[in-house]
Length: 115
Image (cartoon, rainbow, N blue to C red):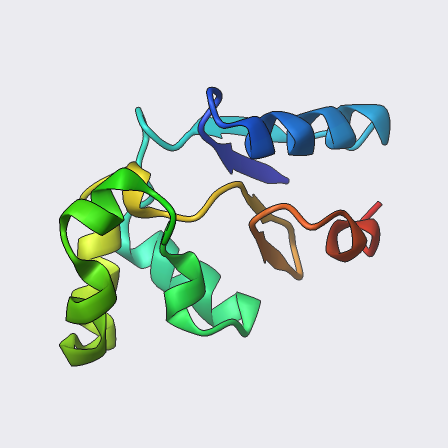
């Protein structure tokens, strides 16, 4: 399993603690130093079944500074994926990627399905 997170993020810390307590093995990847590629993001988005907007960190400073709330609706999906691939701080985290699922953000109830 791949656990993509930002170590300083408190939600990511909670998710990591949850994984550790459940003894679920994973490979940790720092989203700031190793940003997901456009292809990875496309695959994860398709496998997640979620709207692409859910992959954006809408509460992040960069999202707000770039006024993406107003810009995203006019962008194509490919443009949005390309933008997400430019900076890990734009991406909602944590992301947990398993063989048959992709979880975006940490909601314990949703994650219980894998535990």
